[in-house]
Image (tube, rainbow, N blue to C red; front, side, top):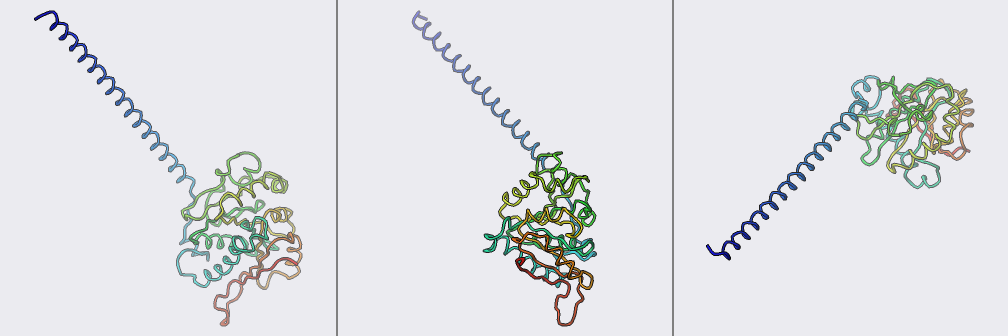
Length: 301
């Protein structure tokens, strides 16, 4: 073999070795990228699974069968008359919240439910209204236990009164999402009252509460927020709450609530509120198809 041929063979061998090295480097890079992508996918999947588990652990389970046994609404038709009555009430509230009247009301999608005195059915009405709104196809509802002196949503719906409204107002948590709990009903979320505190009036009257109300009203344009509130008479917290909402529903018990009490109770509400009345525990007659609830609406005069 001549000197030239040897030189050409050596050059070819060097080029082949360089090509092999480049191929090996490309394979290594490809393997490294695949490994990184796989690791990232595994981490993402694990994170998603963890979030799902955490959400499931926070979810409040609404037992429709138990609610039905106790006279509450559910998605079935066993209490048709009751569902229809709450549909009528709900429709007026939704029209005020999202219709033409919403332009004249401050935070019209925030609704407080109260009564003149205790034990007249305000929590019963609050829950049924929330369950009825949750049946809407294009609306969601947040039910807030704002009866911070005597919280009862957790007893009625059978869940733990975990971190809630008062904990947020105290500054124990700064994340609003931590005090809003999902339920097994897609369109319904719940905010418990939270830990008992001796400064409930001051907390509800705080700037932090006002900002929370603004956030709840504005964050989701399709959301209705229902506050199960303390009675109006003898409780200083309720008028404070009333200043933050656009609508108020006052529950009265037939043959029990006095007209004078209703007048005194509503006199504490802001004149700009849209105020509705629900007559609870009425006696069904042959002339009344539904019988259990009546609803009246009007601006306070």
